[in-house]
Amino acid sequence: MLRFGMKALLLFFTVLSQASSVDGSDDTCVERVDDDAVDIERRMGQGASILDFLRPSLLEPQVLDGIRAKLFSGELVIIRDAFQPEFAEYAYSQISREDINWQREQYYVSDNLISNHRYERGVGMEDELSQVIHKVLAEGAREVKKNHTMKIYSNYDPIQNYPGHNLIKEKIYGEVDGIDDLYSVFTNDETKKFMTKISGRSCEGRGTQMNLIRTGPGCYSAPHTDFRETRSTTFLWHLSKNWKAEFGGNFYWGSSEKVEEGYFTSEFNTLVLFIPTPRSYHIVTEISERADVHRYVLAAKFNALSPSIEDPIEDWFGNEADHIKLTARFAKYIVHDMDIETAPLGRRQALSDLKQSVNDNYLHPVDYSVAVIEGDDDADFDDLDPVHVLTKESSLLDVLDPSLTKDDELLDDIRAALLSGRLVKIEDAFEVHFATRVRDLLNNSEFHRDDSASASGIPGFVDRKHVLRDNPSAELQLALGIFDHPKSKEFMAGLTLQECSGAAVYTPTWYQPGDQTTPHTGDNGLKSVAFDWHLTSDWDPSYGGALSWLRSRTVMQSYHHASFNTLYLHLPSALTPHAVTPVSFWSRGRRLAVSGSYSAEVPSEEGHAIG
Image 1 (cartoon, rainbow, N blue to C red):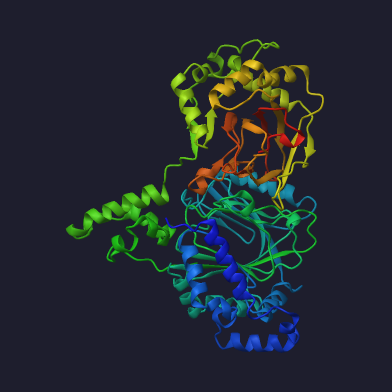
Image 2 (cartoon, one colour):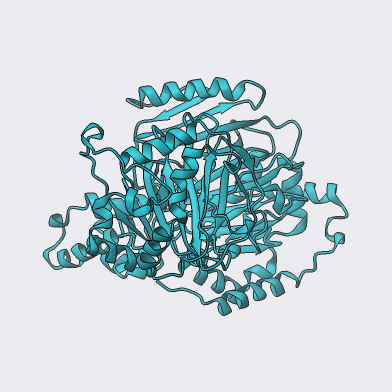
């Protein structure tokens, strides 16, 4: 797939910045607000499209060529001062009106179930909704259920829906005077033709999805792609005023080359564009209670016209670089439903090659960013030998599952995976009696809120969790002390080929409702090996708290839900971005883990592992 290097990327934004400055951006553009509004409403009534309101300099051929090339390469386009100032001010005056009835919506995905609920934010309301959600989770989605406050979907599609994709936002339901006229600018046929021209994907299908989104404290969106049905191009016009990075609500682009470059703070009159694909995953970080203004976005999600097997689709989409033109519905059709035998004999091989390539390189690629060491699902707790009796001389070698430590070939595979920058996920990593005892000890320990961690160079970074640092029981100290035993450090050094002679850092964590860690790498220049040992039982994916590995090839592959006795290992670097998704307010049980690291020297407090 074509990609721009960083030099071209910076040049492209320089061109946009210079082009945007041609018109000037002083306050004289909005002196006569009332006259501007009358003129804008007149033009909208005459069928205006976005071509009538975009800055003219953005319509220059070289600028449009740059936008098209960037979108077609699967990257994100951010255009500041995208629309004429008077139109941006008019749009803001409409969406920020006090007479609009905004309704808060909780959307969530569990195993084989999708649901959303409208609710009011207030004392006791989340408790009431928690009871409703748990009833839904217990009953499942045998059929579609819908009323004025709730919708449950039974048509679960794992390509388009992934457990753990939760979000909270505020939307407008029903018709609102003035808003539908504003929408008409974006649903106009000329707008669709223009969007088709700059995206390289058809945007002329029926039913452009228009939404005004308002978000405030507590709102967020976990990793997702917008890759669904016939959706072609996502168009997000940010209209927030006086928004600050520390308020949260930052848009994060999952495939950014550097984690700090993935964060985008909402800015007034800024347009965000991308083509939804299995790889276009993005996040909106949770908005802080400190936010004293609302975050507004006008979202237009264009749909494509769908071709058929009668069309020369092997020519249109046959090259891997052209797979990006495929919507979710048509990609699924090619892979799962296309009957090649009905095509002329001369086309069948090319169609077969297309089907294989779309499956392997687009819809269902192998995720080489994660190595999974599967556990033994048939193990019987009662039949297992009791764990080694712990002493101060106990090390990892005494409590890790023997099938791991005594398999040299498996250890070689783990070493190779780590050295190639992959996340290693080891299921049933420790002897089950030991893991169970540590979990029980943590359940009886006192945790304290900690949001002191920082990530240098990342505006809006949040790391909020509860930790156990003071007064652990003697038994828990003994159990966790195994990580710092010289034999443990020697074992980790041999496994990873990294220097691990410094004091091991290990911190028990409990992610409670609202806790989360936004994207970061964990690389502070000190850690040589990072680990997370998950000790969570009976956890539904909709509870959140998933480890999201942001180098995965599809968003569904990026989710690693909280589980019991699963050990994650990676070598921290600029190429290891990851996050922990917000824990839901209806979660039950405890999202427990022991997070830590090894290093060549004693880390400072800032060296504590997070996520």
